Length: 257
Image (cartoon, rainbow, N blue to C red; front, side):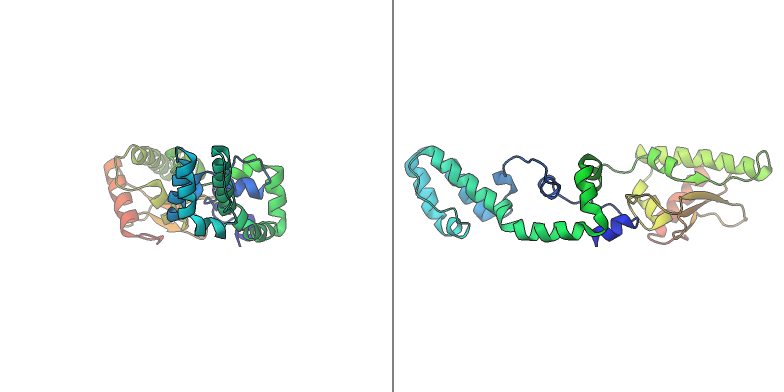
């Protein structure tokens, strides 16, 4: 499903961990750490073993965790502190990678639908941005470059009004980025397209800005199928931002305020 969605222009599957992506692409990875052990009880037991200051305390901690270590195939007698570290690393490695090996293979087979995994292995750095989680929010420049304004004939009265509103639109996005208004870039994108992120292959057709000249239509409108955002014509920036904010906030997931 991920492969087909991605190839057909779906949203970015940006939720793969660093290790999962490295394993899928057969990239070298550092040994698993205790922080990657999701089972909190097991993590605490392994930490207790790892932090034991002498062999006696390490053996006591191993005995307490004997049942869990046995299930992981890592239970063994130790005679040195180095053996303790090897036991902890073996248990951690099996929990993080060993027990998921079969599931990882199934995921890899699925991702190779339409040859996607092969391309990931050829271009791992490029595809990493697609699959790895990213906290970077949309920027004003992202939406400014994303939407192309469809203007009337140059120097006409309509064109002059549209150029003024196009300027308002750019200033509006910059003010949103600066926290002036209580809406986000993602809300604007959802209003215009139904998606809160730009698809990996971009939108098709390319997003456009058009303008509403009819009297009485004060709020923004959108055609989410065409990714067309229709901006209302207003004489002042204050009027424009007022109706833009109200329209987008009051009409979540809908293209018409």
